[in-house]
Image 1: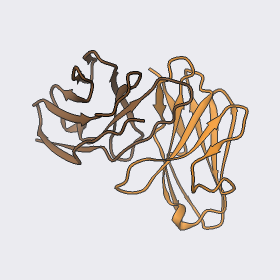
Image 2: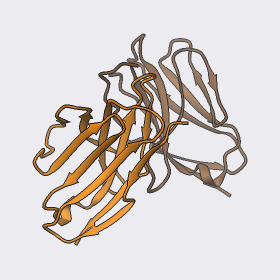
Image 3: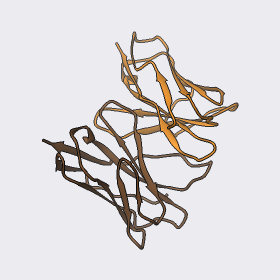
Length: 111
Length: 115
């Protein structure tokens, strides 16, 4: 599986956009980019995923570079409830895959 | 959306006793469920993969006789921590993979404290 690299932590101001980078330079053609987040003492929550096109849903936007070696998760208007650990994971969509988590980025939204 | 129910959310048990944690997929079928453990300030660590109707497969270093996994139906997997010790105190999280779209949904976790 392609390894991902994320900054260990970042702060952002409430109401502003939060841009979370992820590097996945060894990603394969059939691997998707997934983002999850884990709010303290809860199970991880799915945010968004994409293959090569940019994606947007009610929670966030995902921007994937043309060469697919990196991506950015955008929380358009961060709130205090968005404080969490955010995990970027690359994976294939198959029946044999086991989801593994790296260290993620601890995002702290400040008032 | 998909929902996974995990119970109990918190449990305190005495050293030497066993604790069972349940994980149910409420609105989808999951032939495969996963069990993770998370220690404070660390990431999730995969313990085992639970397959409906067959034996679980354990990650290296996880004792299969201590962490008993049963996946008797397409919507239910259980993890039993046998002869629990204080070092087993941790946050246990299950995940169910939808057999149709391969999406992963996580339970809310179980905080186990062994005293």
